[in-house]
Image: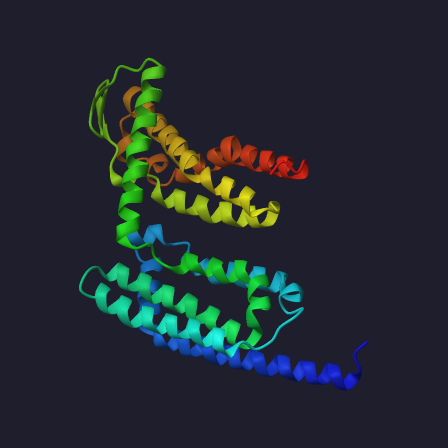
Length: 302
């Protein structure tokens, strides 16, 4: 059992480490303050990109919650690792300088991506510097979860949107044909009885797909014990997103063709009804997959 003097010294050391880490964190925040302001505007604006990244303000709070939840395990054993932390801090600074310089000649969103990536690595470096790699390993989830604050670079986001758009169209077309709806397809344009609809980029379901990815990561961390199970669960995100989005397109198409065209042009189910199909996707597809993986884990199959 530790004596009173040992406990006091440990508490002082812990306080000093906390102050040091906070200082490093503040330096990082000040360094990217202009990009943080742009990210704030992006999250609370009224553009399509703002709707896509409306979840970002919640990310630090979710990360802080899991950090607080695991605080005893994280700080069970800690030590300084100045060299390892300094390397990560240097990498973060290099990424910020080079990344933002290159991105400034291309697309502003990519500049935010590089800046936020450098901030996340900077925070990791500060943590390693004052608490070491053992504590870092225990805190890996809340620290890496901050990565969802990084706007997806256009060279990754655009192909992902095209994949969702293409496969959503394929699923929708098969569904229309399977239920006997007269349909003629011209690329991404579907001609239904008295109605033509286009599966545009806005119909790709990218927003709900990102929400599903975040939800999947959280559920995998909470309910699953093995990384392989979590990866399998994450692998179901795209199929679930595609089927869910296909269901939405078919539903709106049928309502527009056979009930009222306003379901396509000016109806809340088209504008804001994504949450309905998101919940349906969770109930019908996601939760059974999660339950199956938990069952297999208990049987030590995976």
